[in-house]
Image (tube, rainbow, N blue to C red; front, side, top):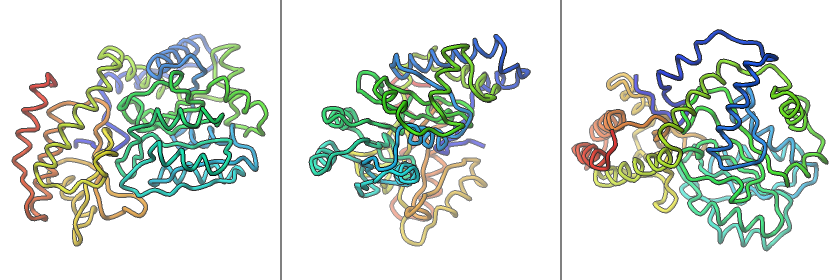
Length: 379
């Protein structure tokens, strides 16, 4: 089976081998070395000198960690909502007592600097919750840096969900002024699922120290354990950390900038091919995600039947719609260990399945997709 769901992504053989190592003590020198290595690699990739923590939880756990550390009851929070995960971000903050203002956007779009500035001019906020790339709809904030800048100019703390963006879209934690950033292990960096990575700026620490923090996700506790002994306060997911480190080794060997560029180049070629094949793309062109390709299905065609034929007939496992989009679109990952062969196999299957159900779709453009990627030097 070829896995092209937008997380988890397929693991490299080296990652699988790394995860098969014998478990080690989480209070011994081997773990301290492993944890410190992971932290330094993430600092390099995310471009930050701030604190980085690796949590034993899903990315949703990372989101809860973020909001529970920086949100106090009554805090004024602005949260643009344009899909399932941006809505979850807002709901998590609301759970911890925030007064959330929802900036509801079309699911086919994403926040723009102009929309954010208008909202910020109407009210004073303490925290902005911003999803960089909305996995549920395949939309991305293409002017993300400008949005963060607008918040920082007004003294607003910025918490970011970069779960399906980091590694596939440019990111510069310190250069852009991101205060708290959450990413997932199983997306563009192609690690095993089950880890969440969170970065914390010095400005965020001022807020965290004043907040009523949770027990398990207390970042002050995580910082103390790391600074004193390069350990975690609770038992870490040791073998997942082994796999994650090897996944990051692969990224760094390839080259961090090249890794991101490959995601964006593949996406450009895929979108161009799908347009030429007359496929209906869900996201508006200026907001299309380079890491999640969302394809609209016509009335009478459901995601479940398309996904079943892809899996049974072609050995390709993609994902369906979520939330209000459930049943009406399919989502295909452009994440992680990308290759021409896997991409061509996936879209050959998708176009063949769609062409049997939708008039006017031309599956032959897969050949031009492969030719273009290979001309760009990709394998």
